[in-house]
Length: 275
Image (cartoon, rainbow, N blue to C red; front, side, top):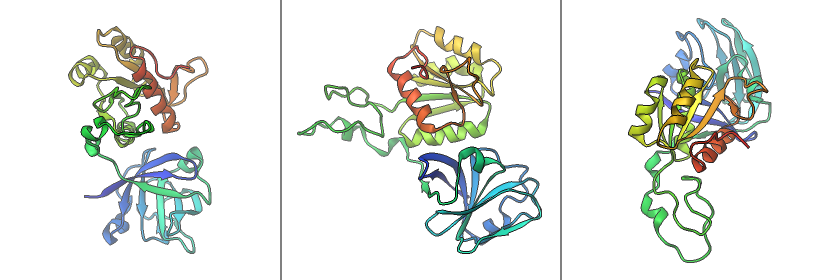
């Protein structure tokens, strides 16, 4: 089974993609051959690989050449099928959907990094509830906001987030990133199940993808009408000015999305992207 990692741009402080690692001869040889496309948010990291070819491929790609420290040596954008590309000193190549480098602002000299998906249960509750003498610790990055201002424990479980989107790639990326932050994540493409899932999972915050859901407004109304108070965050591919600040950019910085989710969790029944 192919291994996957979260690939981040350390220089920009942003998530770049969820990358499949092709670090075996057969995996590198096959690469993206046979696939019909490479969606935004996904990539393939070939290593070692000082050069690549796009023979038998069906779509163009962006090729990011990296040194042994995963620093960007060169970028070949819009590399079409039946082409080759190589760069001296390259030790790996990250293949992305055509246009992703420009959209994500990747530049020569940027340093990339690989991150594991951290299990939700990686930190035990006993570690968080134990009283430790001395100054109050900094807020936890595993369970954000786990301590109140007076030091009392405010949350004994991960923040429960429901992601509603027909875009499976957005669901996958959001699930991985939120899980890495310690959230308990449920995803679905069926907006009609929102009330059922919220009741079953005791959801704290719902993230609604308006771009992929024509009934997004109806879904928001259903969530707002529930007896159980739930925070709401709405994302869209390209929010118009008339929608801001209520709607976040779907593929914008993850920190903005997570901050909105935290705000929505802190004030259930309201829109987290406001303010």
